[in-house]
Length: 291
Image (cartoon, rainbow, N blue to C red; front, side, top):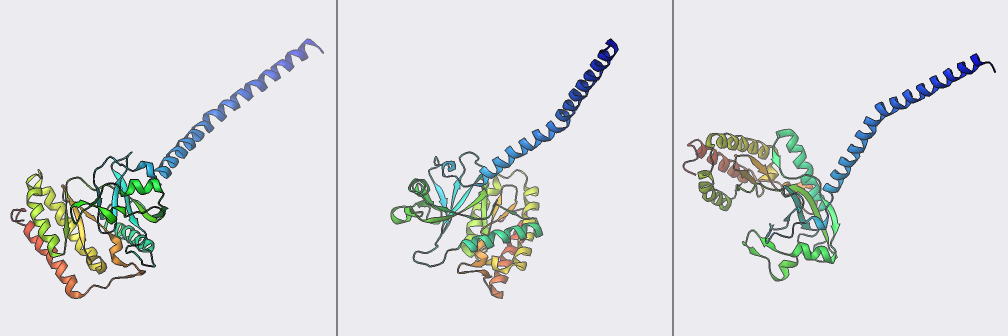
């Protein structure tokens, strides 16, 4: 082979190598960002999935009182105090042959529908799930249960609300604001609201802002009750220190043994509840001074 042929061969080989290196760099420059993005996205998705799953070890057992209503208890997350879990036994009454999972699911679906329609606030972050109670979980769940209605820790049989081997319904939700009051239509709840409101309002710095949010929330609540009269049954909302309303317990709209059916509310009961809210609205026109 002549020297000229050798030099030509070397030039061709060198060119091929340069093209190969350039191509490899293009692969790195164009593919790596997408690969890195997909990896980050996968990490985010994994965290989101882990965050949405009920994990017994994530329960904050440092609290000395776990608030419980008639059926549900709220357990704060240990890793993130802004979220927690509503936990309820599968049977609302001992000896009943139906569970109310579908009722809770219907309530969640209604909350999503109303949120889209009225842009209202609530605490639910996902649909209910079913979990089996192990002996370890039973100990954690039944420790420090506090009966909100009776204002005392549960003792005796009531302290075994979630027995080992039973099924529980768990629903992820936001933690309620620390400073808040509950407003309802039932006379006893209205009286409690008025008493609590006096002290509550004293500490509010921006009364006008509070009043505006409160009245807007009240108007939205009345619209919702007129479109879904079943929610008048034990109607209650939570009001935070900025006057914002948070709607609660959407499952109350549905019959526990027939989750496809909503409760029927009499016109008298409906009018009474709406009139109560109107009366509270009128009080606010006087800058909250007579609440």
